[in-house]
Length: 81
Figure 1 (cartoon, rainbow, N blue to C red):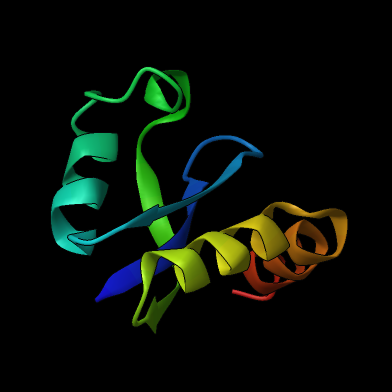
Figure 2: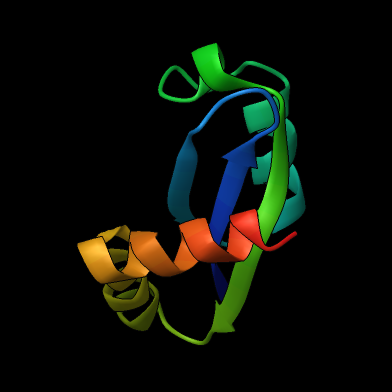
């Protein structure tokens, strides 16, 4: 099982989209400043996640959420909370 997820910076205007097989550990790593890409934007809240069965399917969904339309939907989700 794989997860495609989006996290939102609590203090900034930053959304990160990724995929993992262990969602809880991955969020812990982001908030623990152990990921170079997201370190300057921590702390994060989980904005969205979806579960898929294969890595290939997860990669396709990740690409969608990283696209212009996908990021737009994530921004609107974040702003509605």
